[in-house]
Image (cartoon, rainbow, N blue to C red; front, side, top):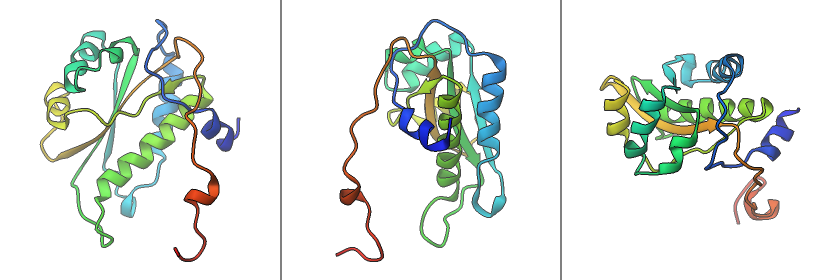
Length: 169
């Protein structure tokens, strides 16, 4: 599978099959996150893999009571220490974590897995539940596993609606 094929095959899953993820697939997915670029190559991200079923159940309340999360055999959590604002005004750690999560979700697709990147979660509840130190920014949460049923990619806007060359009009 090429990178573009993985991008085209990725879709959000909110119901997972009752099937554990093989250790080697988790390791490959984490390796993709480890190899992701980071601001100034500081590599301050932590890639947390939650596989304990009781912890996953507790993640539901940290994720705005999205009960379907319980069906996932694993939940990925991205966080990073020592946040700083880059000259462009963006959080270096938020960008680092977003890049790592993107790499991991695409590797997961290549391995036959799917995920759903969550926007609804409480960073403080996730921090407390997973013992994440206060100097870490909790950026991303994504349940991951084998889809319970075949899904499809959401429609996307046409290229001419989202791509601009040189200058915006």
